[in-house]
Length: 359
Ligand code: SAH
Ligand code: SF4
Image (cartoon, rainbow, N blue to C red; front, side, top):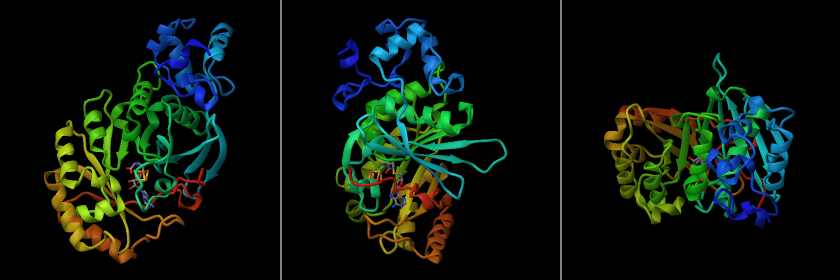
């Protein structure tokens, strides 16, 4: 086994029957390993798909041979590419151990091209939310930093745009990103690195179900992304019923963690609220939600997502009139509400539907 086997960037790669991904390396790793060439230069060659040739980094013969002996220069294979009628594309990716994850390419309908990538952080998810298809799989494993970064590089290479300045990232695919915090953080350091894609941290949103221990650690990390919180209920009893994480960290504790996060100037929290018919969609829920937000009402975005129905859950989307009444009530309380019709519904790429089969 090469000397890389026990290094922090991807300890588990040999267990999965492969070499660690080259895309999980920082310039300082390349330097420590004695890679042939200037570390920042090699890193840039790996991390900028616009400079690649024939779908792979453009490296000298010596450098390529060095990498190939120790690392995997391939990206996760595209098992399926599913274009949706709304312009988004879901990619099903196959990892080296045959496990599958999904990511979504969502161009925004504006004149200059801007694209949001929805990225996965785990295969499956341990959090067990009862409305979510991914949750019904349970956790299979964490993604390595290289596998997280690999999704971004693959989307840029295959679907564009060429310029990373036009890319926005949301960690709203499969998995609970804060349950894989170490690899998420390494991936962010790579994606935000000046010599690589140089994506500003304020264009990366990490969505969490409310893992307070993770929120508190992430608050202190650099680079620090924007935070989205999946709220989805307004009483502890209801939230604990649909989101088991609430049994560990309840609504009051969660609110405390947001206060401690200390949003910077112009930094807003995003809240996601999946509307489940007959479960969390009453006007009293809207009142309690506004109340819970308290002074955050001045600096947030609140996305109402009507439930995307799927076979693994009995919940349904509320009737349109109820959705509008709920949104209207929140607006009356001074909340900044958007009803989000999920993109990619027709190819099962919408929120909470990112699951193909039980592994
Ligand atoms: N695990 C993280 C990020 C991935 S889930 C989190 O929970 O925040 C991304 C979003 O999809 C979350 O806001 C979640 O509440 C929402 N979601 C899950 N299942 C859904 C469903 N069936 N319909 C609509 N949204 C869903
Ligand atoms: Fe996991 Fe998020 Fe789905 Fe909950 S909603 S099961 S945290 S992916």
